[in-house]
Image (cartoon, rainbow, N blue to C red):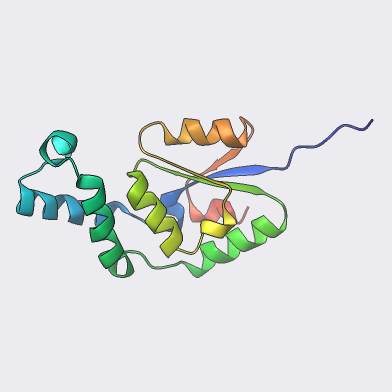
Length: 141
């Protein structure tokens, strides 16, 4: 029996592919203006905030998120090389899933983790040896 080698893995910060921060901030401003809700108390003040966020983000994603040709090319190359790819972000799941889809990365990645503790959960999926990527240049190295 021969030893099996584990495929290399990358845990990629969503910000490398596209910055969801401005879209999140725009939604928070909209939620505050329309519903009087603040980021600290969304669950109490606006119980359906996740649905509202998803609708808002779907309508505005093309304005805030533009696919990056360098990132797309790197993901395609890495996937072809057999590298396991995962994405993590602090952003809410609804925003993260929409962003990954809009940026064209959904079929390239194995896992997406979002919200508090996302990186730790992703490393549990990809393995502790996964390299963490927080900059576009790191996708090319």
